[in-house]
Length: 260
Ligand code: SF4
Image 1 (tube, rainbow, N blue to C red):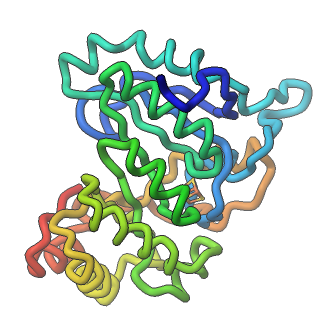
Image 2: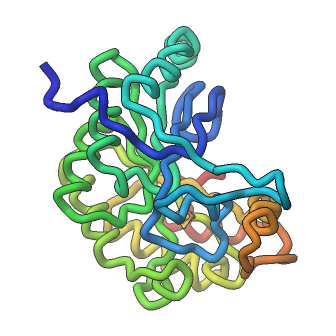
């Protein structure tokens, strides 16, 4: 019998079906409220608060999130089992950051595993070591974002240093947990050629052999207006695949498989 309770409650701001960009195959993505980082480019700013936020305009304001039990979340995820089986997909925990609700996340991952569903965890990696170890051991894949190779500049863009993140990344790799490292490439923050060399050195040092680049987009811009909070990246042009060529080649020249 599982030591995790299916009655555990979690605060979620979305459960998105038919995702093709958050791990292999067709996936359901479960979006957790709460994040210890405050990335200036975050496309889900409502996710940063651990409490429900009101979103919208005037009288039409509604809560951005809802409490779900593990059982309810599992039931929604299992509705698409045939699609997971057909496509090699599964369920991805995202956010926000699933590590901010560790008991709920562990119970959900455990329940999904009990049903034979592939589990992925999309994470910034910023979590206490014991929490990170428990949740990563319940995941079949970590989609692990590395925002900056330099600790001080990491703190400047996200509000936290990268030392705990890199320590947790090393733990996952030492434990042979499958990791797909990803770099959100942000204009004026980490997208120079010098940055590409910095990332390549870090990836090599970690022994990572592949990385996905996530070019900056503006999908979250409207949310800042609806939440009535300032947006540091307002008006900054999006990056397109063709803007990433030099960056990609520098990392590939270091022997790391690099794709978008
Ligand atoms: S880690 Fe992700 S969810 Fe958290 S602030 Fe950064 S971009 Fe947003």
